[in-house]
Each structure stands twice: as C-alpha cells, then as structure tokens.
Amino acid sequence: MSEDPPTFDWLTLDGDEELLWSSRPHRSSLVPALVVGIPLSFVLIGIPLVVGAYLTYTNTHYVVTDQGLYKKTGILSRDVQKIGFDKVQNTSYSQSAVGSYFGYGNVDVSTAGSGGVEMRFRSVPDPAGVQQRINRQIKTADPSRDEKTDVLDEVLEELRAIRAALEDDR
Image (tube, rainbow, N blue to C red):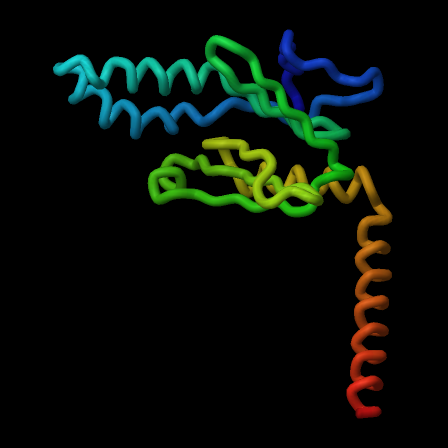
C-alpha cells in the first residue's frame, strides 16, 4: 500500500503481522437502497431502509493481513471475525449486474470443516483483485500447500489402482 495504513481501534494485530489491504463496502453498493428507499421515504418506510444501509456501509470493514482475513460488522455492537490462511480451503467471487457496472462484488471464503461460506466480503471494490490477493497470500503463507496436494493426488491414484486390481480379481 502506498498510503499510510489506516488505524482501526477494533483490529488487534500480532507483533509481526502486516496490514496488506483494507476496505469497506463500495460506495455504489448503496444505490439499490437509495433507489428503493427514497421513493418510499414519502410514506416514511424508506427512511429506515436508507439509514440502515448507510450505517451498515460505515460500520463494516474488511482487512487482509499477511496472516489472515478480518471482517468487522455491527451498528450498535461490534462483531470481529478472523480466519487464518492455514484454514482457508477455497475462495470465490461473484458480481451482480449492478455490481459489475459499478465495479463491486462479493468475495466468499470457505474453510476446512465448514459446511459452506465461512466469511463473505460483501460489495468490495474489485472483487477479482481481492480474491487474487487472498490466494497469493495463502500460497505465501503455506508454500508446502502445493506439495500436499501433489501427495494427496498420488495417494488417490494409488487407491484407484488398488481398487482396479481388486475389481479385476473378481
């Protein structure tokens, strides 16, 4: 990062942990709430929609460090979630039509042992770039990850050969 890193009172980094990227939801992600909320504000229903969307936007932060991922949410309370790169199993990103037009989308992170998405960075700018940054950091944090995959592939191939030999003996 070329700028001075932002300071977050909610973020407690380990002594050797380095902040690599931080963001909040893309400003344009407020557009759908405004499109719906402003016309409805004439009947007072839209005001809470617009205020809620704005408060969610201002109180949500995402951080990538050299050791893990952090997500802070909460309007009245604070919820901070951390996932270490050693636990990340899969990453993906998605963009809606509006998100593609304005340049934002979601980045999903799945971990080993979870039934699905463990952490979602919602409406972040350049979701493909964020996903690439996370994937690069995963490889940097655990260079033996590719070696482990190779070993597992070899074990799987050997098990298939054993199964084929057993089926031939029948």
